[in-house]
Image (cartoon, rainbow, N blue to C red):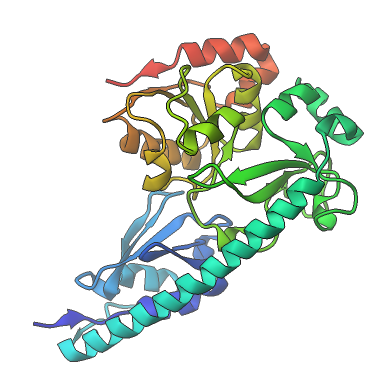
Length: 336
């Protein structure tokens, strides 16, 4: 019995720093199309051409390793062939050793980011004390109380590096509801044009299962049981803040996700039987994240999907205010 030649090491070398380990596989940026998010999952599969399979969650494209190698310019044809079983076993053992080393290094980086995030988070100030943050909130129909209730803080001038100066700061939480990192939302123009991101090293250290979470959601993640009013899952900072503003202190638990948030461990933290309203973004990539979430939840939760038209939840807020958002969530279509 023979195995197909393994092109995964060459693929990872071509991807370079745009690839990172996730579980038994990898997540990478689609550098062949200029992608800026880690939307491509790569899974080792010895029986597949090229030794792996891949899927681009932003475009829906995917296939075997040889196809990915072609996109990366590693090969122009089907130049893969049988190799001796003993050689394949040696390659597999070497990959396993490398995976263990990578996992240990990733854990060390994650712990470093977590410690730094805790120190930075404790230095942040009440949103109401930051004039620029308050002006940004008011321009979008929010109050400082809305941001505080959602668990946001403001970065004091000079803290967290130049990019984080005077930014709204979101806590990033893991599947247990613990603070593991931070992300900043620009409240004005930035030199690089980026509106929302984490500090350097955040994505590398925390590839998946990380979310924005309101206090009620953090209690749920830490094992506090099902929130009586259910769960709202949305994408990105503005939609998270919008949902929190409408939910209030006694409303549903609100989770804000992005492309790498969805892991089975995270989804399993949502209690069985809980009503879950999913709010998709008005773009193809966001819609795909939500399709994945529906697939993971619909057999054990009462799942409904809100219709925000061609925009997102924050667009509804801008046009129709809190009442319009509440109506949109109440009218969410329950999936059979």
